[in-house]
Image (cartoon, rainbow, N blue to C red; front, top):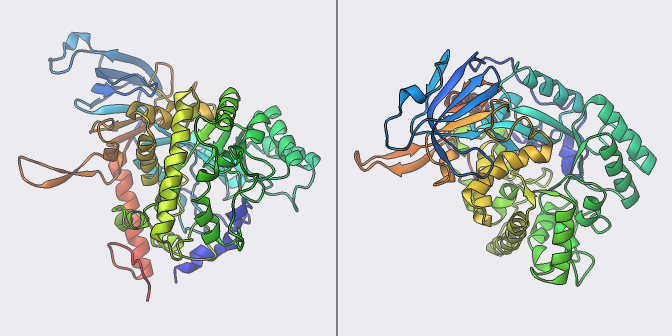
Length: 531
């Protein structure tokens, strides 16, 4: 019954082709949550992790007037009573954040705002993001239609809906009648979406002359660019080419191993390979990084130095392929029971006609390939960061067992696994993401003059990034002997408006309960097998 959601619009997004304009998800309702902004909001006694890479500092009082941070004042020392005379004047709203941590609002640099295929209403996606502290999201594709996305961007900017600030990138060719076959058509299309108000373009691939023209035109129009270098064109155009032509951000990792080839020119595909068979596509992708030049080799150093010089941003989205290296873990993540919609769960399950639902018979051999793939991929990303390259956090959730919001926190864990210091992880999730999108003058760090986009959490995320999950994380209370859930965001602040993150997640749980009731499903874990 639920499979109908996965088949809607035939999910032609496989190659970045937009769904028809009528295939839009349910729009976000008018905002009924949040308090403020206040003439003067004061957050008292917190420890601040400011997003720049600086170490934590506290106790600190943060003063917000309307939508701006106007003061960040250190007011004492840990373990010592605060001298009240040193504190900023009272506000018309105050938050006692003693023992808590304040971070910049998170920036999800690769965040799809749901889709008809997954059966996800906009309210569900947006509240999962906000409930996890995401206050800025870049949608690389605007697959619900550009007009739909721009309307939500406008409503979010006016805080008419409960939503992060949204950035609308458009899949290359969306809305064009027929294929884009010439450089002139590419330039005209880019000019058209710029005139409509898009923030950028998401590419999957095209011929070299068309790609070069489109990227050049995007630069001239002041648009950002992102690219998933799909296998159908990567043999002609890899990331070294697109970065040279002005690409802003590289999504995932396709195009990077191919740039590192030194003993071949194409991926060593199995000879019965068919790109439309996603078991082939993703099974073979797990063997790709071992075909690339090794660290320290001449080719590796040439590609590394070139990408650094071109100031390319990497948005690895480690999270979205995580199931490939441990499918059982992804299927049994503890948030699925209460936070994953049944239509989305059905979309995740093996289905040859749904993108990302390719685990038809996923073996330990597949997982071992992907574990090795991750080791090599993570090494490059960490090395790139260590040499001064920009790496931003993006989740790409809504596919492959990754639920919105939770997938972003998983991305932070995986950046840590790649070798990032926790402070570097937070920076990738805040300031580096803002830089990649071009909004770091307004958001991404806790600094006077910037927008009041903040997240307040009760646990130290540097000690345990898992404490950022909306479900919290289990910890034994030695005094009571009980296992408790600790963590999760308590407050998400956007434009100075104070949202109770726990209430937003409670709303999501209710949306999921109602969907299960309507589908005749019991509460609790979704079935892994069907009769």
